[in-house]
Length: 416
Image (cartoon, rainbow, N blue to C red; front, side):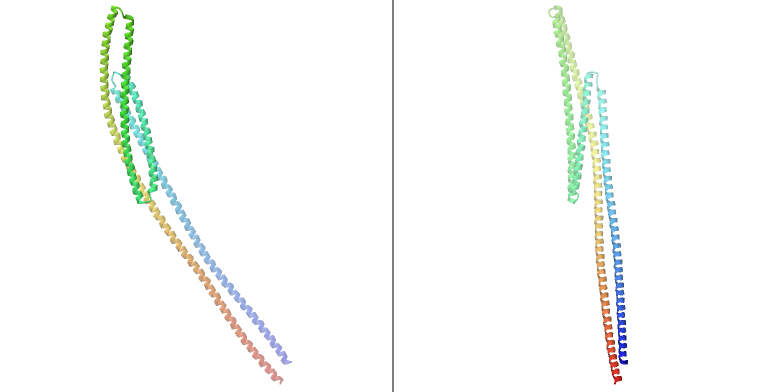
């Protein structure tokens, strides 16, 4: 009985020890779970911090891109302002050309007034009405010529604007290469030569028009003289007819006829005198015409010198435009160089960004590997501890077995 009770107590103690070992294993598993949870939280915090750093870098890159876009918009606004300044300079040059044309018209009107005063001062006593009519016709023709010259100048301005537009288009087409710029300069020289030839042709056309007008005036004067002679002959014929009707057949009438014949002779003499006077008038007109030609030639020389000065000013303005164009081209080249530098900087930034991304990926990979190694080590440690516990458990089991054997032997010894 005592042996049986001792065995029961031993089994009870064994069960109690088993329950204790189970509780120990449960606590061990709980600690293991806690450690795993702690490691998982650490890993999550690390990943969260890395993600936050990455987001901050991304925000910084976005701010940098925004600053770059703002700088680009500022450059665009600056280019727009530069274009507007260029258009304003062009409008100012156009206004200056218009003022110059207005001064030219004023000088032309002044010359016209001077010519009118000279004609008025040279006008003689004879043929006053004829000269007045001729002067009026001349003034009308002069006004017509002025209108024609104005139309021609307007056409020339239009051609110049068209050439300017063509030059602008050509500049846009040829601007890219040095050879293209050289061709542009050659074409510009050719256009300048063409303009010079055109001006020379215009002068020649003006001289031809002047000669034509002079011939027209001379023909008009000759026609007027012919009409005057015709009127005079008509008056004489009517007078003769009337005298023949009233006085023919009488001696007194014949006397009067002879008197009339003498009168007609005297009239013919007066007509010859008038013809001589007209001849002298023609001579004076020719002299005046020569003087006018001399004056016209001088005025033409003055105009030519003025046009030459204008051409020189125009060439100077053209050189100024060329300098401004070169300056703008250099500025655009500098801007392109800055743009290329910014592009290189952006490329370097992208390369750095890619490098940072590679480093981030490598860090993440390293972290993942480290975590995996840590997990592996912990697993191995757990397995090692588990094996150690199992060895201890087996050792204790063997010890208990030996204890039971001893107890059985002792029990048998007592029974014996």
